[in-house]
Image (cartoon, rainbow, N blue to C red; front, side, top):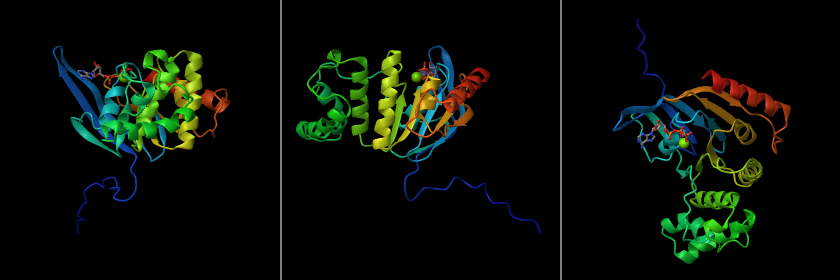
Length: 256
Ligand SMILES: Nc1ncnc2c1ncn2[C@@H]1O[C@H](COP(=O)(O)OP(=O)(O)OP(=O)(O)O)[C@@H](O)[C@H]1O
Ligand SMILES: [Mg+2]
C-alpha cells in the first residue's frame, strides 16, 4: 500500500524559550528609477540564542538589507525571517549632535516612554563600564570616534532587546582603535551575553569576535560558506588557529 507522504517537516516552532535568528531562503528586490536591484537571493542563516554570528561579504551584497530584515524594518519578498526582538546599530552612528552623550545613550529608554530622568538613570551607571566616565555631558563632536561608537553601542544595548544587529560598527575607526574596540566588545558580550549578528568587511574582526562566520557572495547575496570559530576566549589575534580561519574566510570570499 502506498504510504501517504507527509508535508516536509518545518523547523520546530520555538514556543518556549528564545529562538535567536533564523533567516530562510530570503529574496529582497528593490525597484528604483534605474530598474530593479536584487540585493538578496536565497539567503539563509541561523544564530542560536547568545551566539555571536559574523557576516562578511563584498560591498553591496545585501548585508545592511539583511540586518534590516532581521530587525523587522523591511520585509522579504519571499522566504522567512524569524527572530527574537532585535535592535539595529546602523552603519553610521547617528548620534544626535545637539544632545549630550548621556541623553544620546538614554534615547532608547526615552523612546520607550521613560521620563528623561528615569532614562538617564538607566544609562548613567553604564558610562564607567564603557570607559565613558566623565563624558556624560559631552556632545558627540567632543568625543573620539571610538567613544562615539561606544555611546552608540550603549544606546543599542539599552534598547533591551535580546538580539543585537551591528552593522560594521568599527569600520570608520583607525586600526588601533578598532582593535581596542573589538577587545572591548568581546568583554562587554562576555559580561552580558546577547545574540549578535555582526556585519563586517574585516575578516580578522569576524574571527576574533564570532562563534561562527558566514561568508556571502557578491550581489545578489547569499551564504556561500560557513566557518566555526572554536578558539577559546579571550582570544589572541595572533593565535595560529585564528590566522588559519582568516585564510579560509578570505579564500571563500575570493571564490564567491
Ligand atoms: N532602499 C533601497 N532602495 C533601493 N536600493 C537599495 C535600497 N537599499 C539597498 N539597496 C540596494 O541593494 C543592494 C544591497 O545594499 P546593502 O546596503 O544591503 O549592501 P551592503 O552589503 O550593506 O553594502 P556595504 O558593504 O557597502 O555597506 C545595493 O545594490 C543597494 O543599492
Ligand atoms: Mg551596508
